[in-house]
Amino acid sequence: MIITSLVLPALLAAAPTAGPGTCVVRGTVLHLDHVDLQELDGAAKLFEVMLHGAAIRVTFDDSDVAAVAGDATLRFGGEVKAASVPLRVSKTTHVRGLLTLGPKSALELKGIDGADVSLVVHPDTNTTIGPFTLPCAALVLGDADPEDVSLLTHPPLARRVAVGTSAFVLAAAKSGDVAIDVAVTNGGLVMEKVAARVALAEVRARWTDGTTLHGFLAADAVTPSNADWSDEVGRIGGMCGFGVSDTYVGPATMNVGTKLFDQHDGKPWAVATAKTKIDVIGSDDWVEVTSVPGIVVSAGCVRTNKAFTSAAGLTYPPTAWRH
Image (cartoon, rainbow, N blue to C red):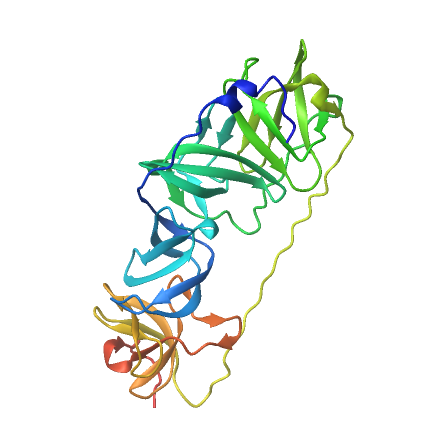
């Protein structure tokens, strides 16, 4: 990291000591992978799933693992790596006079200090800003749409400058009493030079997710740049079926109290707290569940056979065909 006299006062300040505490965040996640589901009302891990469009609450503590629980009509519990949980702010938030976060800014939790949390923001795949502190209450769960990729915006060419180091500290004022760390994994960061002062450059970077970085660097830390961008976004899609023709394949409704099991007469891992629509395969007393709201129980087109329930706890559509 390049350290100049501009930021020394900030670096000399004593670092806060993390204290015990937890942070509970609620919301709906579009995608949360590698969730270890646990046995219902027990601590035993059963199998791994991906949550997709699930309403959940996540409890963070000082460990690198967070507790996940269903927060809608299906009660379930599990664990996931804390760093993989998508966090956002509930409204536009300003940090230290240097950083503006929008509701789409992608945050990662780094630690907990009482009612506050230490975070970094990833405005694009190459840039990390922070750590900085916000109240736990300012956070919600939620992903950006996979097609809504955040990109660095194009500053005017005449004011386009590059910070040529992979890690630097941006200060909020000349004294450097308030500052923030910036790390870039793929070369330096291209920014807009807003103004030049004696020995200082006022610079700014904006991203399409609403994140803005605005502060001061030593004048010799930036150089003119003619860098350009290529805005390429990929997308993946597809549908598949299970090809079963001799048994019932279709929707059903879990009645209140109906449980999901990891196998026939196996260990329960979820229970319906309200009527819950699912999709099933089977016409016997036990059926395989192929679709659960918010939980991906099959890997692509491969049936993982980790979700079963008793047909006695289901209500079928009036027109459902079953043997």
